Image (tube, rainbow, N blue to C red):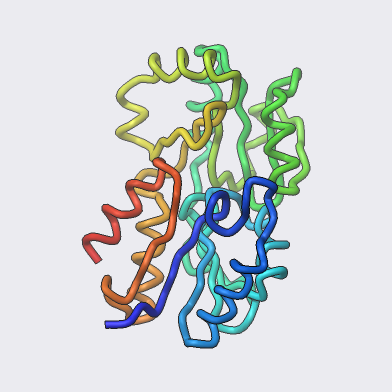
Length: 233
């Protein structure tokens, strides 16, 4: 049975170490589209962080899809119509904010339109994330976050500080949320059972595709849950 949907991560797959799309990658994607294969970007970045890639790779036609926020958001790229949209509650945010302060790490929360932090001394990795995903940073107190639709929170700090903090995260948090370390200085916290593989599985089912017609092309160890989800498709 032929492959009809390929889900690809960004770093190390779509772009090289200079964050550039090579001519070979561009040609391969266009060839796949011409052959009737759906190419779906699946990333931990928010939609703003992949907008230019979608344009550059010509993945904004009717019937094109994108998976962002590690699977918390799945959209049609031509219209922005949301197929999956998972978010954290305000109570979740407060619990994460309290824990980050207890552990002594910086934290920010990401919505579909911005990065929000209650840290007066904004962490350098929050600034790094803002640059990487082309989103503005807003300082807000926890009390001012009640009306925000938060998709994910991130504990961000120097690797040695973050590693020490991770060792102290209560087991309850792993039961309540999907947690993965996407970089030495990033720990991502999302709604339980949110991951790229689950999102791709849902999209494939919506399109009437089987496991054998779906391929996941990823490079990072944090994407292991994706394979587990697709294995049950």
